[in-house]
Length: 205
Image 1 (cartoon, one colour):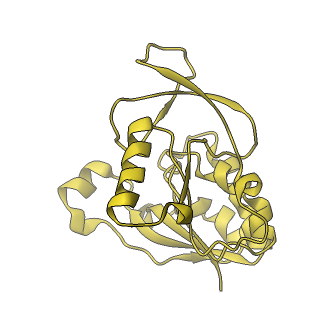
Image 2 (spheres, one colour; image 1 turned 30 degrees about the vertical axis):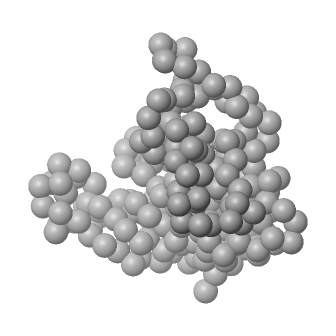
């Protein structure tokens, strides 16, 4: 197993849990490297004294408690040759498509059986990066992969929290680039059938 974690406390907790569960250290490698679409990019992040499952990239040089400069890595570069990935889980607070772009060789070589990706950048249709993000992942269709929405929400966070039963759980599957782009990658044009896909499964049928 290969895992990545940037926050020191989260890293410590991950390693501690491996020990508590008697998982041999040689079966799991945890790296403190940010995963993106390009190797060796300097990335400055804020380092927290708690573990809450997220990190902040400091673009504005605003005041933070501590800054840490790390070097990025791609999955193509770090995954050993001839390694077959049974499950690739990606949840990196909006940079999921950059991670997938950095794993394009793994996908081209058919070395990823399934990927589960958290996605949420379609909530705001005015987001100027949404179309490019959709194009970034569309290459997977050319390689024979399909995308399936595992979990969705209606797009109205306040209403969903008030009535969780109204949250749709879709099994929509996109099998082509044309379907994916025409459907805006999971945010339908039909207001009565509008949903936001939170978790995507990527696999070959």
